Length: 250
Image 1: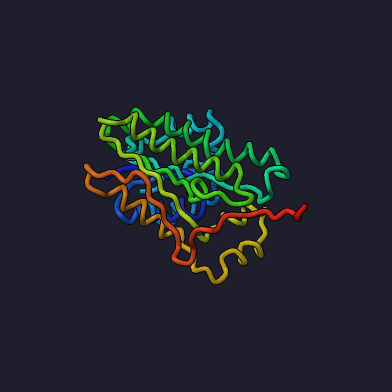
Image 2: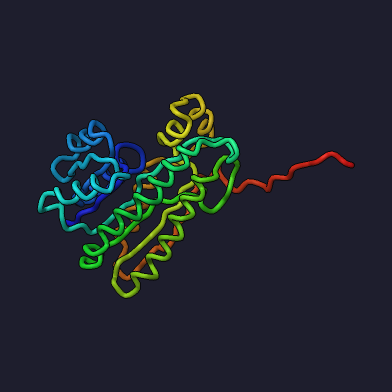
């Protein structure tokens, strides 16, 4: 039985990915800050799930959680870097610097820390890494500022990992989702349910299960195939036009 670790598995894409992998007979280590959100996965899926509750931004907590893994969960074949968030919708000139730092610490620093820690074992097992990026890393939009920048980092880090891991047999992929209806907008807006409902209303967005199924597909491809980057959008979402500021005639 293969073993995966899924970060940010307390809800949304992470929790859905844990369910899909467990259903495909994987063991899954699920991480997140909220132990009460991880416990239901154990209740639902049984002892193929190992919960590890810690803040992925805390290097000491990360090391302690990995060092404390039960023996049968120690040989990790797949790392799914899903933990991440967007905070705030204000333009850069009115943005909260602490929110910027939190996004960088979570979406960039923590992602590279767990990846660096697990690389030796992934190389030994010729495993795989799937990084959840975003179309925000490719297509800018007002208020995207640091969130988009962090996801552009994830995209480029993925491609550079592929280059560095050339010849090791380790597969590295980035998934760039567009609109997915999860708690994403609630987190971004500080719990504004109306803003979340308005964003997704009538849009027929993707679901967490759609992205989880994509992770499983990538993870179970024949070992000689690698998906470098995969961009997904709902049919009802496409590319916006360029902005043009109009100034009064002199």
